[in-house]
Image (cartoon, rainbow, N blue to C red; front, side):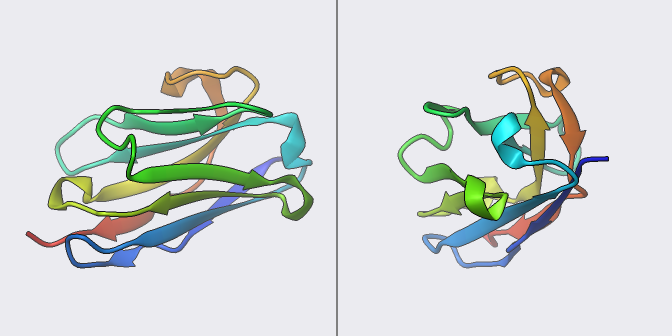
Length: 120
């Protein structure tokens, strides 16, 4: 069974940075496309970023501020978030799948989420 565990969330002032981590266990992460999604209160889950074995893709709202990466040797994916804004406040979820996609339905495995709060 594949398990994903996110960490690194917290409270950060606008303009600050956070790095989220997603530790994968149960199967080697190199098998999967990795994605990050987020869900703000009262809103639907939305795509943030995805990374395959050689390419990455970002939502327009985070492009230029967030960077997705992966370390297959450590079975860990990352989301570096810079220049954070209050509208980035959400629960951030890590996901693993076999299709490079911005659709949540393409990802079979999900973590429990980590809260990121950027006060206005």
